[in-house]
Image (cartoon, rainbow, N blue to C red):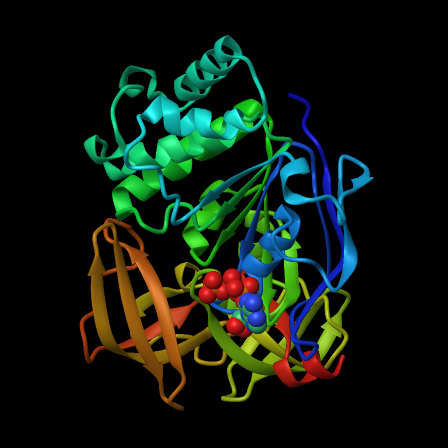
Length: 371
Ligand code: ATP
């Protein structure tokens, strides 16, 4: 099977001539890559996927697969494998019959059908359960049957819409790895809708963060996590602390800022030209230490705070802190980590500090909207 590149060009969907659900989306999914469409409920992810599938007509824009525009091609000619949360197997048919269903309409001979079904079931490791009916399978096995049904037609690409939403956490994590492994092995270009950030980080080559019909950022998982383009992306993927700050001085990419509460910040990668910015700092970048008398009060990237809550999360402790001016700060600490000193308790006054490299600058929301 040859991997294909998928391009969306200025794709737009307006419902009832008034509500723009998908607004001028342009993106490319490289051949054999998995792109996750990620965003809050109602941001337009499913509409986007359904346009690619051919189930919703775009208002404008183009869908190009393997270099060919397919925007006007009917659903059954698009040759796409689809897997949805409600995968609805036929309850009275065996596993093999369920998987063969998509082939019946495509006029393959009986022996070709049997051969294709066996191969598809082997791909999802269910060859030994071909004669069972769905009620005799676990949730994960049923999901694999649905995946085999999507793969049996040898699709040119795969579309997944919250495919694991109905599974419990551990099965979900296992299936994420299985689907990803299979998708990579087959080199099958895939677009997946999810609202689960961990799922996107685990499975995707590229993550497209959507907000109110528009693409907020499209980048690799590491890029999205380490260099979010906006405050929305930083807050949506993982947790983040936010400090509004103003530039005091600057030398190339190195800058000194001061937060609205007076904390001096040293920034090593100042990419914006605006004087007023938002600084985001990931919770795992913040160190919490007991407050000592020798602490350098005026040093950059440090502040005093009070521990309001400590939450035990297995290998991590989550600290919810409040600075003297009322700003909330969250910090993560590995339960076993050396170097933080004694574990601080609720009510303790502590010093929080972080590296200059951990200060990541994004536009202030008001200025981002005006830009
Ligand atoms: P969720 O994660 O909740 O499934 P989503 O990001 O997939 O959300 P969509 O289902 O694409 O969002 O919906 C985007 C917006 O378009 C929503 O505000 C929704 O109410 C609206 N919408 C979807 N389908 C229609 C329709 N057929 N007619 C009118 N509005 C619609």
